[in-house]
Length: 393
Image (cartoon, rainbow, N blue to C red):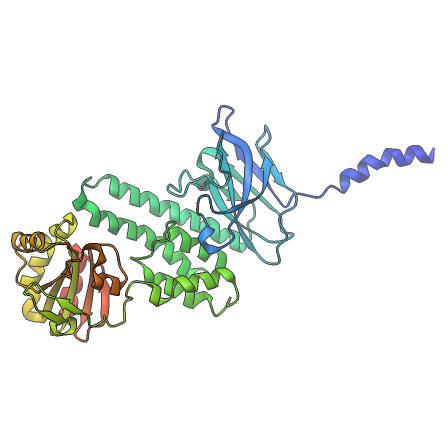
């Protein structure tokens, strides 16, 4: 009789001791979906791996059942909050750590922060995994990630709408760049304002998944200054601050431009500081083959020069050229011979560009009378307004 009682309660005992999953949820997936019925837990091993396709380490996976449910019973042991990417893949995908980073609305992954012993339940639609992703009763750090995702998705949508209505030609590149900067600024603002390290670092990577911060180097510097005092030993913060080393970045706002010796159109070599305007100087980096540069010459710089040069405004053109003839022809055709021009005529190996640590044109720097950088990469009406306002002070 006693033996029967033990046998009766044994299954109940084992059932009650089954551990609850630490990470579980539902992925809504139609029967005819192209998505495979498995969800992957991907761990970035360094900051560069965050939201980078093919870079993270797949540490676990879980089957998605017929009713859409999945569960990870035991997550990797973690002493502190750890950032993972939760992802799904299309059927037949060879690379299980492939991440779609281009379109937030259709991205196949979402970042999550896991803490040892804290359980999470998520839900998402397979076709719109990132944009539909939700967490039931998220902790503060994961709530910040969800807010970041929403900010990024909305900003990216506005960016796509702006460039889809633009002219599809080379001269539209400045407008496209301005629209992309607006997207970046929305994500950067989140990083500047959040009090959570890992969501901020996720934002750093979403500002440029390609790791190109040439147009926004000051953002990296500000993030290093924000997080290094609080997390000096965190390996990702150390990576961030290595990226933010001014020696590795384009010339920053607020610092003096090097007094570079420039080969002038006239044949002379002149130190940059000898060419500065009385109050304000625009150092314009352009090329004869650069369509948006040429348009800026004619439509913005000439009217600006004519209106402001008597107020102490100077323009200094530096051309990324390989030969003299096209350079001279472009200056003559655009009608911009009234301000000084320089070029090393070494093409992409231009020493002045290398000293500024930049590779992309059009680019420009606005310098005060002492050669200090006041602003960078302003174009069109924004440039005109800055010059007018500064000279009226």
